Picture 1: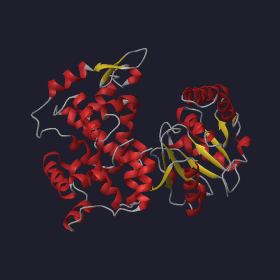
Picture 2 (picture 1 turned 180 degrees about the vertical axis):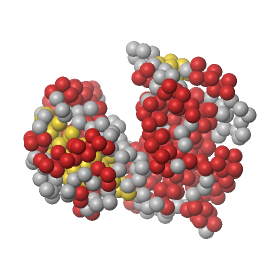
Picture 3 (picture 1 turned 90 degrees about the horizontal axis):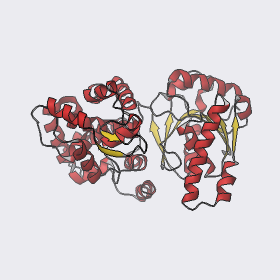
Picture 4 (picture 1 turned 90 degrees about the vertical axis):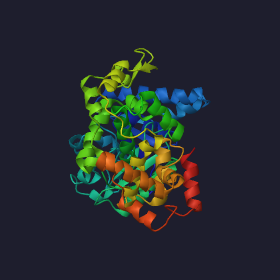
Length: 409
């Protein structure tokens, strides 16, 4: 069945950006929230995003036409004819479960019920309703109207038909729709977490300064450094995600202590005016390094065990990529395109590993494992590939080239 009408539950920042992604591709959209104030705030966000497109050349008449595709509603009864519903509410399992119970009561039996969760269990969400087969994860990346990736996550009871319909829907939005098997933080954020945490450990031991770490990451493969990115997203959000992954995956995801201390000091980043950097209170533009934090790190720093190199930031991400492949979290040919589309990387972790040499990656990880422990325990799959004398993770093919081209747009 073709998806024509889509309902978005939640008019916050993420919900509003999903709406814009939809209307930019001519979908009729219901936007639902709990009260009129929340809906109007959502519409204001949508207006701002459309105005940004107008400044880039979109005719005003076209922006007005797209806005008219959105209908705001307060009652679930008003979305009963939607072909697909995307839930984008608070990232709490109890809140999401309540929403899905309401959706099952009011939507048609063939309506796809999707969650935009970035980390929570699709299986746990679908466990609360009777028709579990139609529940799927559709994880958009922020801002959804710009980012080219959507992760499609099946719970234990999600039907293949639902997954295929969700993937086809992602393609209609001109996105790279990648099937990801359910795991904590899914694919992209799981790998990102390893890289972000290692940057904090490098900082804690003062093997490199704040600006040096960020510059090294940008020069190597990233559009923005890990510490600047943490300031954008918020140290409090980062700590919550880090603790969740630590609980799910164990020691290799152990959060760096400095992150909790920054949350205690309310050095949360842009939203509080101070994080790894200091920010102008009005413009929110970065002014300089947080000198209090830099001084605190220097005061506590111990002897550096190993000289800082950019590769150290990416080796945990590379290792997690091989662990994800072992677990069949995604197809090998999808992994690099997903990271490139979702994070804006110029090259994915598998390509980086191949450039370094798989044997060198393993040698470096083994060296770091002796110093730092579980964060660098080499993935068994990487060991097997090296022992087999393999130089590449997967063979070149046209489909891979197409996905890389899409991811780099």
